[in-house]
Image (cartoon, rainbow, N blue to C red; front, side, top):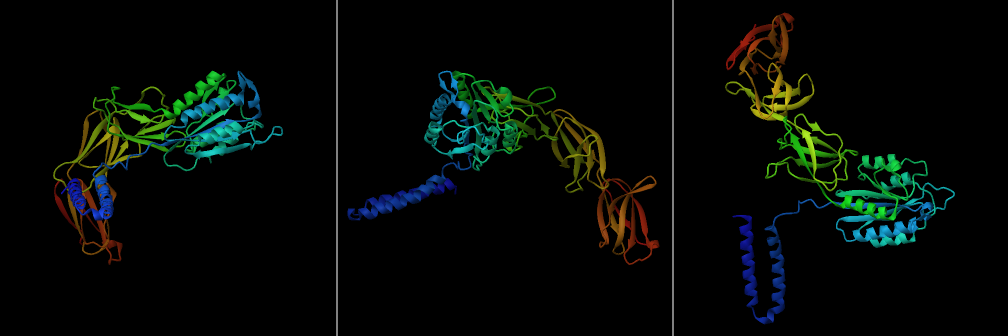
Length: 489
């Protein structure tokens, strides 16, 4: 009986009990209500089990935005309609109002240059004033209102300290928005500090808004820079940054064949953070109902490196997605098929071959015989793990075609020994012997599957203490035939 049917019958039984309870004398009303409540508690889990299980659906990541706010003494300078600090407060407050009711967003505030008067210079003047928490916009706005610019501009130190501002989270996007009217004044290296944050996977590439004049040359290495030389540009910059952070971006990956057409598919693609090396996404490439590569929704704030897991894999250089457009990522991945076969009736069990690029010793794949695998178009060398090993070189794999490699049907050598002892099996190559197998010391008979060819077995019984007691026998293996080889004296 199906699970759904069982739950339905259970529900009908519970409803019958409820109906019976309602026909009992009214003097038992309280008891009826309690019974009804208990029955409903038992029905609810049964009903919930008939619904689709969405517990495995991945939740949307929480976007955590840390504002790193400049409150150094220079923020008292006049700027258009007011002092820089007042304009920055007002416009940032407006932005905070727009973010207050956005789902899956948490905010925090770090301030520098506000605790110690300059001079003297205090390059440790940076503090996390409001840590990450839900619904903390009022606290951030209140802190902004009370900040008094006093000190210097330790930007690198603030970025270094920001590494500890993000509590551990398995499903978060960590963003830094640096708002400043000046450059580093404490000898630190903001570029190195930002790079370390990204390489450790703590944050995505930061955003920098420069107030008052263009600091692009100083901050392009820190993050994505926005110039705010005027109040109007400051508003535009803030809105542009938040749009970048909150909006989604689409992309498709075109796996190109040798003709430049996006016909390749059904292979996994791994997207890695270019700076930290962290794995961000896995997508098995597919075509949609129109025959086009499927659309992916990817976080555009990350700089990516992508590996397409063909054999051998194909790797892209670093790339970023562009917000507001459908990004197309083209990768050359032309592929064909390789089939490995053994002629005649099967004697091997689990025969495999090592696949390498032509003239290379790097193992690309270990392929089973009687199996088809897909490879990039090109030339390969094959080492068949039979006895003796076979090397088949310069095998061409072509676009959308199957290259079949067939080896001869093997034969069987039955090696019979008079007693346990020491021995080995060789393939005869002209006047030379090449070792291919050591006999089992304790066995008096062994069956060995061998490719057709000329062989020699060399053996000495364990109890024979003189080398002159060595016995050798030459024999020939033919396809599909069994050869008994007796190594008695």
